[in-house]
Length: 323
Image (cartoon, rainbow, N blue to C red):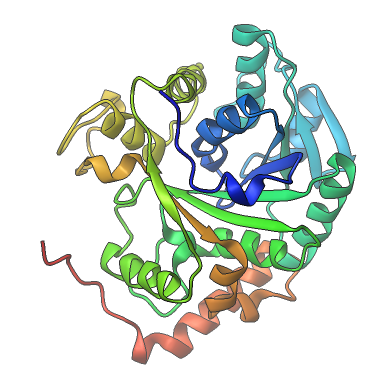
């Protein structure tokens, strides 16, 4: 069984595709089924992530490719056994490719900077890899938040990536979201309202579902578990819920007992991909213009707080879904 991607037509003429985690953390893992599907279709596919990993530290202790010192590096399989950081998903993903599949796959890491500098880093990587299509991948749906919502989740990092990518000279730019309902802090009522607005303007490309019998899903789950089960390594709450949903769990289910203190509601909705025109998503954002010229994550955060304060009197409330 194959993943029936509704974006295949958009990628017909693309040869070098970059799948990049928009919100950081484990977002890039949400793109792995897309990676394997597009690679099976004969495309050259590359992986990158807006990273929460301390890049300077990883460059010192592990084997990496350096494109811009301390700002843009490529994690490879060289994670030394004597060095077991509690958070290095990119490096251990590259190591999974090597040790399990005998493949040399580089996972590029963007430093956690503001959109102005991140745009430059994207330009460097796009030129280096000759990228002609970009898929920004979000684990969850807070990338669709525009800034005037209660329950907006952690929209800053996703908006930084969308803003940085908006003016890249690339023919195709797509936002993919996986894990609707997996973010406990997000108002999914407001997320659906934003989706509807994108549908209305023709910026929604369609949806498809992961199924547990798909080889690309099985590779995604195997890679995720490999990283999660490294000694003392963090786990991804969103991707764990996607795995649970795809294997048929429902309700307050926990994949690992170390996260049982959180009450969740796993449902089949979490196994769905949603695809959007990334430029249209960025254009609708109220936050994007406020942070566009910031270089550091600190400046972007201050601009976000200022905007949220200005909008608080007309914030859309956090509502429950009516069914």
